[in-house]
Image (tube, rainbow, N blue to C red; front, side, top):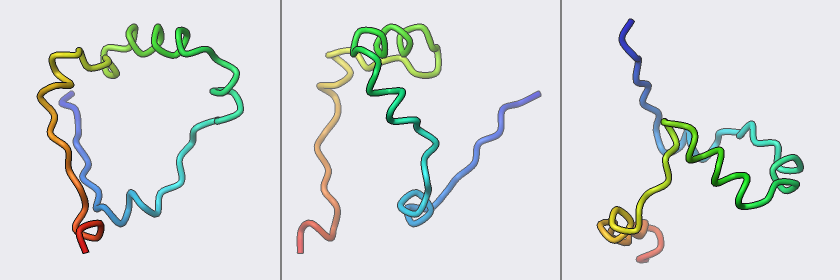
Length: 64
């Protein structure tokens, strides 16, 4: 079965409520979080080389 992609607007993102359990997350060390992210094929951290390819962006509202 093919994967489905869903698009959402910027307003939907701003108004969304996350499901992050912040109290549970704060109990974990950075090493634990990074280890789990590295084990998840859908959440691989960017390499330093990949990070250098990003360019800074700013919103139009910040420029006013």
